[in-house]
Image (cartoon, rainbow, N blue to C red; front, side):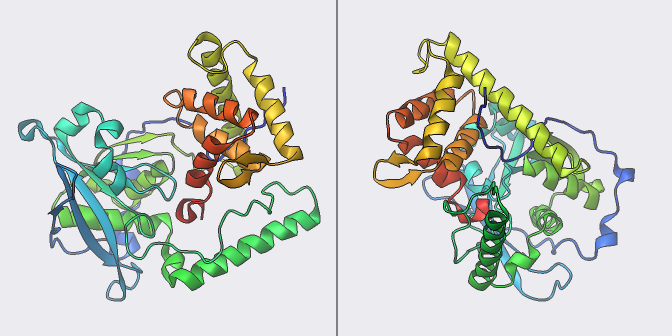
Length: 353
């Protein structure tokens, strides 16, 4: 079976134990935190229990007295003050996913009752992301359905490189100097500035996917400021890119097989009783011949279909039923559900950039 599913990032799991002596000290990297001036909290509108605030940090940590940017921060205090352990920083990955929004609007869905009971949970929109100011803006759409991400000729490769360069220039023109300072080390220093503003000596950290890279960087820079750390879907930064992509492809293939097995044993799956793999292969082949129509929107290309399915797979088993419905609708000529996922996974300029 050909099984066309496009991959996006590695899917491995690790929960490392951090040993302070193995990492460089914060002093090796220049100034790393702002003064403990506190955060001016306000109640988040229509979100009981959520506090919204802003922390100002240097645009360039190598020039701390220069221009500044503002980080959007949301906190939910531990519901049981007597059982409180401390402060938990959360990063859901991306890079480009706004943590502040998740803590503010979806805390009950994102964190267990026990975590909410025992920790002040803090979501920080990394620089350039979400409601942090300025946000990354690009004059050209990062995703262009006319430009294949998998060129099959030199001409196609040159088109892809040319488009990427044009997008990069448009981001610099639309956003200003920020794109030159969006690396993970700067984000880690920003997070430590929030720690200082909160008056916390140490923080706990929960990072998923790219958040595992951010957590590892934070631990390298500030080993003495980590109480404990959980990294889910951890990215091994030491492996070659070819190994990373191969491992990810195997994980996505396995996820699709698990989804197909779920449909086979679950009568409520709309694909129950059918060979899900064959249905999928036929759908992709049809989309390669002609994009699938979308009610009220732009047709969905085969590459977009594959990537949108991958995005669904990252949310199974909870969204397994949604993926089955999306496949069925696309098979019937309307890929509206896949188009909704496309808008989130490919058309958002910050995450895609």
